[in-house]
Length: 193
Image (cartoon, rainbow, N blue to C red; front, side, top):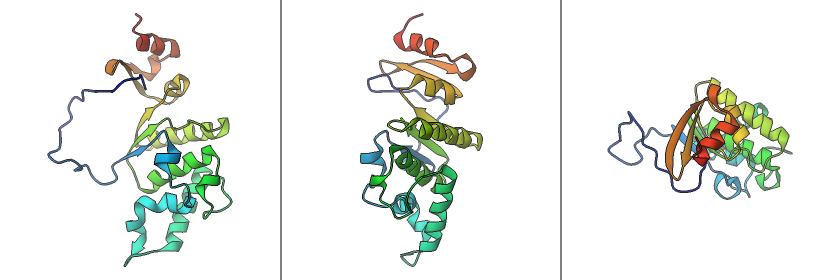
């Protein structure tokens, strides 16, 4: 959950790696809160945005296997219910909810195991928000780790197994889903009680 200033979280039982960038490729993926500037290539199609991080997997001798790329993208568009005139339609012309689903399709196609989702429903309509919430639940149920960063308390309470509350850049509480209410979280965030 977001609380203003710079964040330092002490991580127990984590062994630091000796070299930067030594985490297994594709293990951790980040979805920015600003999908238009940091999450998508707006002038490109949904097809190209989805396949971008896995071009090496879809290529042979430097050429992309177009049919495999289309089949993979179509399967994720169907699963995520992306509404688009076609796979080649530029993402700039799609709704915010469909743009966000394409960002998620990209990381699912990349077989990401740990997803950091920063404000995943910002700027999307109620229907798309419900679908994205369902997708996040499905990802967690299938064993993916999802770190949800959201300024919407109802979203945090509804989707989280555990909630870390921060105040002034410090971790102040860990709350289990069963104990989480908006009122309790607000009190912890404000330092009351």
